[in-house]
Length: 309
Image (cartoon, rainbow, N blue to C red):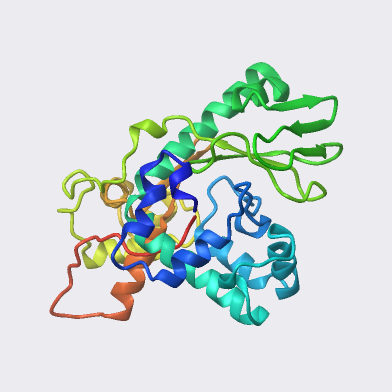
């Protein structure tokens, strides 16, 4: 949200987009103060290794308006920018609308590729922790993060530093494309979390992958739409094959085509490979269901909006 501060190409794409309303740009800029601090509700602690933007936005929607206003007031020490003034319900609505628009214009069409970079970073950190312990893993995040017994500290180069007790509490590592160094919650009494620059960012770009590379020529048939519709939660090939009355080999071929197109993602749990829809797949499925057409049973995969910051 502070494009000039970050090297990542996605960070500066929103303000330059012709479709970015000035009000949205002003509001997003107001969510970052002069110390590059943002309110904690914008960076919620993930509840799973692969959180989804809609779940995170729903978390903001369900927050008490007073909590949101309190965080914004603390962000600006009581001197709110004009973009954040007004009735609480209006401020909340405008914040969510701006974030959704920000996602749609700056992230949605790139997110499948970028998300894989974050997933790879999480695996790397897990390996580091297994080999060197929590303290050793923290040292690889940033030289400004330290662990002394059960006390986590982080020294900020521009804003308030951080100190939180880990006694009896889980620490969550969160890789990000949009932090210059270690970041952390504003409220040290909340669940401990460290946000840090993800490894491998230089291999990404703000240019969408070529259609052929993303499987754009693989069309979504009625059978693939049915398969996509069954992936509400993590599901195995065997479970899908049994439900559809097809062989596991046939279902696996369909899944791989959907995965190549960015509509399905896979994760391993023990010996099982679990598949589920991505946000790209959810948006495409929603579009197909909203506009069924017997004379157009095949729909070309596209990348639709699904907010995330």
